[in-house]
Length: 283
Ligand code: SF4
Image (cartoon, rainbow, N blue to C red; front, side, top):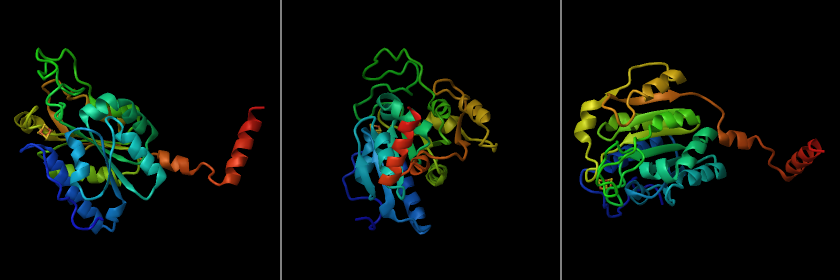
């Protein structure tokens, strides 16, 4: 039952200093804002993948679904298609959404399904004690790469822009006011909203000093300008020593997948007519 505050009494096992606490606090405050605006907390659904981030499903007092590794986004898509009244927020990890679940991320962006995806991008597999992920920098020394990785990281912002996402932003767990604004705007956006969150892993990727030094707020520009968004996303490639911009990179209005599904005839009669018309067109 929702209504006794947005944080459950479940024992929290995140490490001290973990950036997941900031995301949890941000979501708690955002849910309270949404409730004040008239939203029904019973209609908020949180879907998580597998990883340290996924414990959010246990710690937040909203309806939630703990999916399997890499499969949180298709579950969230199905929930939204089954009930358009729900606000569906998907928490995933970088090892979760940018590795095993990468195809689902691309297709959700391509479809423009009306869900919000928060990537807890700590750039390491924290739950399994420190292997490299698709966003770990070149040379990262982890449990599976003691001599350093030989691979460059992917740039997730470029990837989702190329895939068709209609809201693309980047936040940082040490800038919580801004993070709430970015997530709130994503939740209110109609269509696929993607927020890459630079999340501190205090134990295996403690990048606080680096991000504190390198991050800055995006200057104002027309966020409907796709080419500008792409060029801004390329400034930092998750490996070079460039400044790291935070804010909304891109936002545009476009028909959503759920709206398109709604436009398909639903009654048996309409469906029969649709099938008859389709078959007749093939004769
Ligand atoms: Fe957080 Fe890293 Fe600890 Fe996981 S391993 S709980 S991401 S600090």
